[in-house]
Image 1 (cartoon, rainbow, N blue to C red):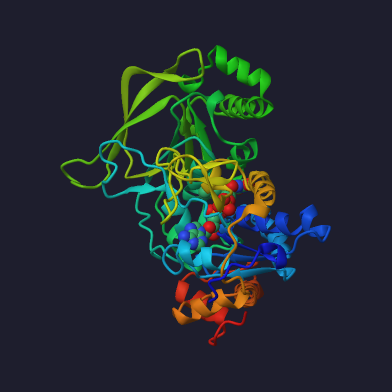
Image 2: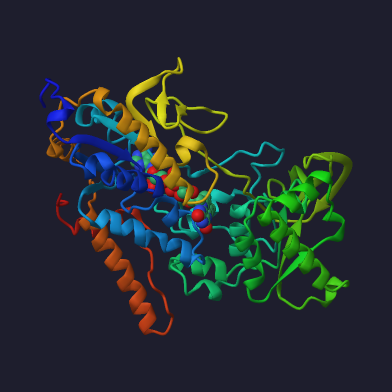
Length: 481
Ligand SMILES: Cc1cc2nc3c(=O)[nH]c(=O)nc-3n(C[C@H](O)[C@H](O)[C@H](O)COP(=O)(O)OP(=O)(O)OC[C@H]3O[C@@H](n4cnc5c(N)ncnc54)[C@H](O)[C@@H]3O)c2cc1C
């Protein structure tokens, strides 16, 4: 490794992007297609690092398996990575396999695109009881994440899901759907077997505010009614609208549509709920604030119920407590009140927002000044809200700033592309490559095809254990770069 820093203007700009979720791939794509690069004014050489052996982040390990259209966004990302001008290095974890100083040695600029994988905390009594789960952990399980246990305890007949966003709906939909209706998706076999054996009859989704304050999107909400043999149940006393709700309904088409959907559903519902015919029910409750998860003497340490305070709207769209409490018998509770980013070694972290402190994507030091050559994009930059499409805007903003800074980036002392590979090999890290992912992708499709031959219409069956993913990706031999 040379100690003398070459000027980046005499060679391609070396850029490392850490995280191959949508934000990382969009950042790489936008940089390679920038005017500076197209005009021949700048040459870039990009390495895209990923902790998993597979790319695509939460599209693979977050988006629900029964959302094939959204999962299909990987086709566009695949095209970007398949062009050959962005090098994928998988199964490499920043902070464990490579440090920031390693990246500083090889790259002129480093972009963190590490997203979020954990649940936001819900600090109420009983949250640690057996049967209380993080929605993100359940999502990781049903989406075949390589680092979570294969088994998931699905023993509850009645389940509470806390939260009023799309993730809460995903969790509630997957918990309530009949497993056979998910078999056409890419769910791994252990997930099918677990869901098939679930005795669930009632899934209750609870939101703190009213129907006009939900954070769902209309498509996700409407989709609930497509689950076979699952009735949606609503409660008239939860349908409260204040002045702010009326304004939101008038001014926001999404809210108008969702309130319309909910009011139609409740209007069509039989007054006597015993007339409902499905074997499972999905209840949507509003104006319920979680108070406590409890056990009982017959089942100490295990969830047996949950208490809520009834809320009322305060005129501004916010909710305040009424002092009235209600209990629901449930044997499992899933909190789905949001995701939260994780701190990374050697870079700052805003513990209230769960992001790397940054200004438009320029990462800041503790004094609030930009750290030359360090950037962030996607959920770790902006926080875990918004759809995949929003990460494109994040990436554009970050790359625009990086290009503005390019003349003053700290030049890497060891910019040769094979230097990082030599270091990974020297450290005995079983990194995977794009060719490795193509092999794993083909293998998963082949597994799906074999199931399809047996009449099951499965496009892919995910390989779950990390060792197996790495072995298939590396073809049993040293990865080719
Ligand atoms: C349950 C769920 C369902 C969703 N459903 C939808 C949907 O239907 N439609 C939609 O548009 N959006 C959906 N989203 C939102 C969408 O997933 C996000 O907007 C998007 O994935 C954020 O992109 P990102 O690249 O910032 O983060 P991520 O997708 O999280 O990607 C970050 C990547 O960085 C990697 N990484 C993390 N730490 C390290 C490290 N130390 N070293 C190396 N690599 C690392 C991770 O492994 C991951 O691959 C959903 C989100 C969730 C949580």
